[in-house]
Length: 433
Ligand SMILES: *Cc1c(COP(=O)(O)O)cnc(C)c1O
Image (cartoon, rainbow, N blue to C red; front, top):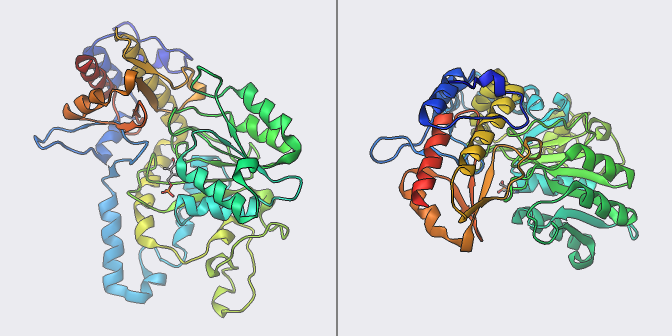
């Protein structure tokens, strides 16, 4: 083979070769290929693995999760309440075991991140603190076609404060005939409405198109116009390399069941920038797990915040929904976001290359073609909303997902998908076309 993995690793537009043999060669040269073996890839009835491309929706299970879960069950059996202090991983400070590793995943300082609740809950809690509308400045900016839960959350926050979403919500919309947003248009909207915008809250990577926004630039402009800036990183965390602290983002929230492989409905995450920690002007909804841990068990009546995102915690740790994340973060920590990102760019570009070889006008990729504007998801638009194509590939052992009205989302996840997976998927798609 002429083209070597390391030659194309840093290329903005890598060049590839055709054929299954080439895909297999890339796999043998992939430095993190062995991590696939640390995950359960779901199997078909005939015992063969599915071609699993749905890590953007529910990541597969790390094999180590079982051991971690059994440990908690055993500690509960043997120790009862004493497990709070004497479990292998004591439950009392359980949330603290995540901060350091998770901070690396989202580019934060350990005291800026916390695992708690679920995603939409955290989005509300963050808006309680960072959406503080006034008579002149009360608008929220979101992307049109945001994930519905985010839209419901911002609409209801606007109403909760006595405003009307019809006049208080600005939705960023692509130009006619385009699928994704242009940074210049985002900037123009922010500047035109600058004095009225209280909060800019976008999905870091749009769930539908897979577009990864320029979060650093949006944060900068948001601050220039005097707004708070927060992101929903559901499709970004563990997928793209964000630097929340350095980019000066005010807050962020995300879930861990997508790219972070922690199981259905598992515990979510939140980030609060250091500059807001210990700031008495930022109000929050409070609970006992947010108060100073040194004095928490004196059970006093006054809340004493800590200089940490932990102060946004309400309740004691839901250990069983957190345990899989402990197992998963260990693997993310071993590999690191840099290596994952390098492979991700190659793997996704490879899929894009193979899809480009298909001679059919029935499909079209709507995800941006530049690596810096996307993560590992490609959204394939199907002409005439023809779901039969999706059904056909599903029948052939591909797990992807269909999003109304007309898109098949596929996510070649660098942690466990191979170049061969990608090759086989595109071959099946081609045959079904
Ligand atoms: C997956 C996802 C959600 C789901 O919210 P939950 O509270 O975890 O059910 C919300 N918003 C976005 C952008 C998502 O991608």
